[in-house]
Amino acid sequence: KKIQGQTFLLLIKKIKFRLIKNIKCVYINSKNKFSFKKEFKRLNNVLKLLRIIDFSDILTIKGLACSDLNFEDDLLLIELIFSGELNNVPTERLTSLIGIFFSQNFSFKTKPHPDLKEEIKCFQKILKKMQKICKNSLISINIAKYIGKINLTIPNTIYGLCQGINFLEINQTNILIESTIGKDIKRLNNLLIQLSRVSEKLGDVNLSIKFDNCSSKLEKSSALIKSL
Image (tube, rainbow, N blue to C red):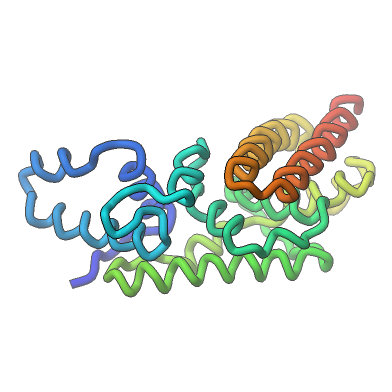
């Protein structure tokens, strides 16, 4: 029987817990030992299929990179990096794509900027890949619900800012408060710095430099907003 009612975010949290702590102790000491052990095997299989751990339950290079990220959706980010899809993405678009991870706290919707359609497809492609792996491991996740929560206001705004467009001009169509976007930019910049370090550890110097360039663009945008 499949595990029902698990959202994508819940799965990510459980797998991250598996990476950081010795989850076997939790299962052994649990009253529902059989149920937990069964679920653990399924989650463990997901990690193996994603090549986060090998078949001896040892963290791979990919797993070590994932554990280096202090971020909720670290598995998605690592899949994006290892997919090679980001290597040829221009700096402005790459910054906007990573901005998707900060776009689930708004109640209104907006269409993607025409220039970002390919990047959005890339993001959805990774999601579907992970959904397929989870399904093969008898774990039910709700990808549609996860995608449905994504609001492209933040990515569209970041794309405009990275192009040097005035925030007030962007804000005519994307209604955002300066303090709100300022906080999101700060969090995004912190993540870009982490991604740069992880890429460097993986030996992908070009991608590391690209993330550094994204961070630099974002800092300039943040300075412009503060000056308003």
